[in-house]
Length: 53
Image (cartoon, rainbow, N blue to C red; front, side):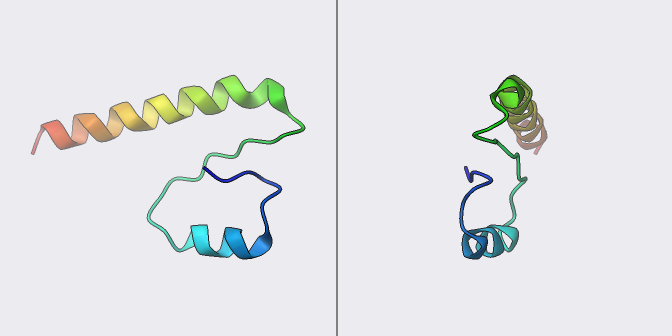
């Protein structure tokens, strides 16, 4: 998990990883629910893809 206010250097490192970035802002807390739902959707998608192997 990386927050929007993390350092620019941190952001450069994260972009090199094979991950989906889901932004969470300390100033826009009303968006937390949408971010949490996206985490669960991505996790379910991953589990489904692994169970068909």
